[in-house]
Length: 403
Image (cartoon, rainbow, N blue to C red; front, side, top):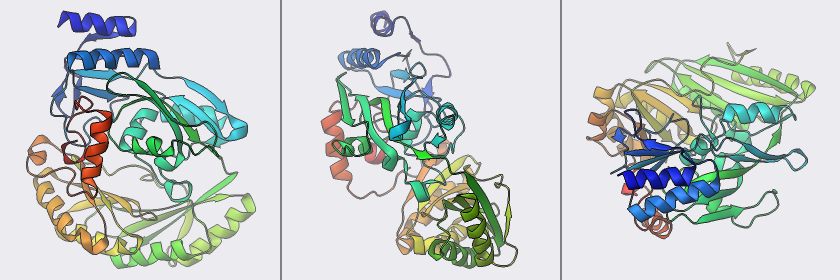
């Protein structure tokens, strides 16, 4: 045990220690924590882990370490907090290179000084670049700008054996290696440790407006969303919030652009949403996940929003919120109802052509139902995992199908 700690300290210049009570991933305690300050140090850490057969999980701000399935085993947490530099902001090319430990809020503040932004919302406060990539968590603006995987241009990652690999490029027009960059998005750290990433940026629009309306039920919500999607408003985002099961649904639309354009489109959106619609401030629930012990991500084809809301209402009392404009919603439900809720939704999911993933839940719920459920292409995903991490050292078991 001392030899391992010594090796980790040598790899990180002394930034390694025996794990404490708080050093857990999905409730599984680690034995050591190492905090590399560069890609080279991260590579040395993973070479040590590979030599010792240590199971590894990466940690940024720790805001989503309990998402996915808990790892089958865990020896070492690699804390990326020291990888906190924005390496390059090429404003003229609308590209930024940031280390994985940079908080999204910090990155956003720096980019805003040049009138630019990474069009990914900080859905979970404190999220880092690495955490965003690992979970593939996007927010409302994904409707217009694309999801995280659409905005990442390249990554530098360390494989399980400590070899450094690079994929993608710094400029938008370079398409070489795009697939690997996208592959790590939402892989929950099971394919490699991302230390740096390049992103496509967007200018911050000069004007923005929110239009909200409250509708009585799922059918009316579906109709309202469809009017927003098929109108001439070009919304940046179309979100919904239903805090009470079976209750009214609030629809909120974000419009961005020039002052004159936003003013005109806002008036059109208000008219299209109908009675009770009005321009107002950003809703308090905007871009946040519904609170609760059990959080479930549910996707649907765009024509399935109404059926999905009805299905959730029938399955169990749950609050629902999310990006109706792209068919990605989140439901929170009380733990005693959660397992049956998830299974009922999975049975009904074919009717709205979607998927149901339990992101986080107490251990007693996880023991009753698989977090990921059926996933297409699982065998291909296993083969990819075997190529990147044949000894299953990176977050083993955290991802779909026990990957």
